[in-house]
Length: 246
Image (cartoon, rainbow, N blue to C red):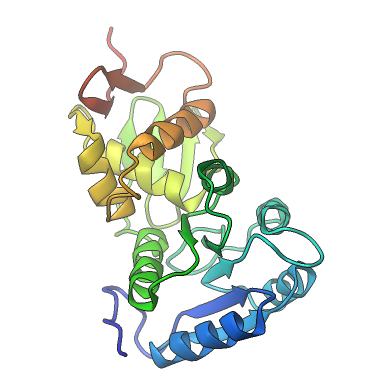
């Protein structure tokens, strides 16, 4: 099995993944398949071991099970997200997290995404699809050409993933940044949920466009904390970021 090289991968450097799963057979399957696909792979059987490995060598992406023996995956991502961010060349500071778990209920999936997860895959999974999703997440978080974007008093710097509103720094997860970047790059144009899914998630998220609404609400709580509001709903169509009207 071979996997396509994603555009923009740094020459001579394989992406470093951290697999966190307490089932030895799943852990070894993922480690073998992902190495074959061209990744560097570390593996951990517990949340504590995963946090230690991530502290010693920051991965480019974490594949995280929810059901672990010492703490659940939701607690692992909370602790990862609570750590001070270390800038990584060409990427944002937060490490992307892709949940890979048998917990398939919608509330678990939404909970994982609300905590800052970038994708959620349920077991049993197809290896080719999983690898494609890994590449999609890495593409979304790899960084954009260094062009500053401005709408009103909102400034977005794609190269550093730095966002400010009226001079105040706004901290966003990788997916929140990608969504805001897409809307700001298309400022003044109404983007449909389908267009947002295609560009931000790069696939139809389980046929559930409500994930767009969920992430728009996250952005509003971080970006539109005071007037004038920049993110607007066009009822029955989608969303638009536009300059404040006089």
